[in-house]
Length: 258
Length: 258
Image (cartoon, rainbow over all chains, first blue to last red; front, side):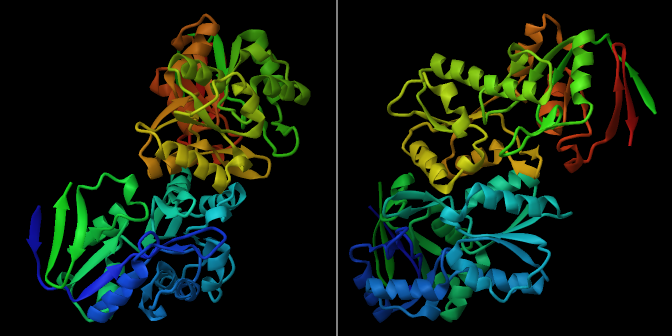
């Protein structure tokens, strides 16, 4: 067993899907055992923010769903990619063709309509039909400098009925066919982690990222100098983890190598 | 204008979609003006084989459709990827999970059923639903050495209503999510061109490949030492062609640089 001594932990960044709960296509989903109590304890001892690549519903709907499942958390503590992407679209005078989940359309309600000059892709789930993919493809084909903006770039996520394809692969499909540029918002983008840390008025070395995705959560955080631990819930089982996370307290992270 | 003198041409390899006709989702499609006469002339002067990555219907159905459109050609002169892939599956004791067009299922009717150990992907068109992609993803996720076999690897093709996404991008999507190996049958695989040339009892330097796809048709043929010319029908307009094809006769290919 190895014990790593670290600088004091004053805040936590938490992924949501696969860490707090497993999503479901038709129901609220299921809270992961112990997670509701864990959030209460973290809130009582530290600052907490949630960094999720969720893009199949708005931040408000996600917050309401989590509250219904029993979580005590504040909507304003949840960071999702759509608001950041919308800010970028407005700054760059971009008019998006939306290839997002029906539930996410309302987030883009006040965007400019008309001739699109980019495609925005989220986790559209069943709205990733062939016709919808083709429509986005034709928009990109007509542009001189085709641009895809993605809300996250995940490979897959855990749903109660099993692992499910996330937006990343579908963006790769359109990129292959069009040679489009891709700009990603959400994890693992550094700015996304930093916005949540800034909101806690902490620095990178005072926080720990907790997630189930070795690429977006763990790799993304560690690449920008944030400590990270992978939980053994959600999709962790599909990865070859090199360590088993045991416990985190305010002064140390205890890890057991597998 | 540049004139390239080449060794005598004794045979032609022709792509079908975008060269002979433009396909349509609900009808026979439309013969490209002049193509029916051109095939008659080529048949009267040379040997001819058709090398198509078509995988949304069987070779027999494709031949019947082309005959209905007015083409005089022989079914046994059409080469498609599915029969070659099926031979490979049998040789390697592979049991496929099929992610192909409904119209192509019957080609695989005599394959082993049971626990799949690979995914076969063709141009599934509207059968590329999210659920179908997810089902294939879950098959691959459960394998120690995930393998995707593709019938062609095209970016897109021309349909009467516009350009349409081909199988390549969807295979890229599943590869991104699973790190699967990909084995491709059809163009641009060398063995595919060579099988058709062997069938004409000719050598590579005696034939010319004619197609609209700069990657699969033109690039694929030239990479293995076969002369190739790109027609200005089908999807040619989406590429930056460096030359304009003017005419081919038995002794020379005349090209005009753009």
